[in-house]
Amino acid sequence: MNTFEKDKKYVAPTYGRFPVEIVGGKGSVLRDIDNKEYIDMGSGIAVNTFGCCDDEWVSAVKAQLDTFAHTSNLYYTSPCATLAQMLCERTGMKNVFFSNSGAEANECAIKAARRYGALNKGEDYYTIITLEKSFHGRTHTTLAATGQENFHKDFLPLTPGFVHTPPNDIDALSDAVKNNKCCAIMIEIVQGEGGVNALQSDFVKEVYKLCQENDLILICDEVQTGNGRTGKLYAYMHYGINPDVVTTAKGLGGGLPLGATMLGEKVKDIFSPGLNGSTFGGNPVCCSGAINVLSRLTDEFLETVWEKAQFIRDELSGVSGIEDISGLGLMIGLKTTKEAKEVVNTCIKNGVLVLTAKDRVRLLPPLNITKEQLSCALNIIKEACKI
Ligand SMILES: *Cc1c(COP(=O)(O)O)cnc(C)c1O
Image (tube, rainbow, N blue to C red; front, top):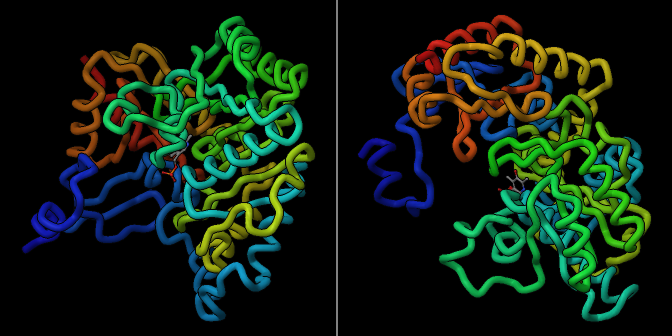
């Protein structure tokens, strides 16, 4: 059996995979089993921050692999402690819970918010408001947090205590705060899976105010927007707000599974030993990869991310078949006249890997993609969109 056949037979069919088998690559270029090369405009869904087989990242990870790979959270390890310190120093958050994925990072945020509500406001203050079109994960509770009916319908009943209001509608959100006993509001600064919708800056600031006025925990789900993706270390930093909890995953490990829930002043003491845990969370190998990633996301580097994002916008605006460009930084959504799926398939045929998000074509290139690679990919994307 070849890989396609084996996968079809033995892997649970939860994914609609493209008919491509990746066997290797370097940087922003990937290679399939037929030796065909692709420019990677997806980064494994915003995970491979510095692309494939980045030398520095690989050395950092290998060095830790040669030292020790896992100890469990019963013991202290330096990579975990150092990464937590780096995250806190760069964000002003107070401490960090490590896990393995975005969903798990959000589960921790939800637990922190619920416990905060119960301890500070009353046992029935457990409602968390999230936005319609949001995406917060695939575990049962993060599905409940996800504001999209189509994700819910097959798994009812879901965890109670989640209310969804439309993005950019501050009146609807204020009403929901008034009409429910709430402990938190959870937002994505740019809704990724929901169609690459950047929230309006005024709305984000109003959400922050509403949280302050009502003693609500503001959770920013930065699983996709975090770690330099939007041209700031975390996307909330574009708006001068201070969330109480920031969750991240995808790009943090640079290609290894790592989730982080950063806890601010209000919730820094919410957990005591035994209240949360994760066998693999804070794994030394994953943390070593993340330390390398974070240490390279300097202000100067983030400036280049922003420049590349501008370059993409300039190149794609006004192009035949591209009706709108959404997103922030190197998280870009294209409303195309052709079906997004058709554009993606044409791009793949012509050697560029791009993604979709709802009805949009989604671009999430590695943050260190070169200008030449970008130009080449954009020409192929333009051609595929053209009507
Ligand atoms: C991908 C994503 C998640 C889920 O992350 P997993 O690692 O797949 O569990 C949660 N929130 C947002 C905003 C995401 O983009």
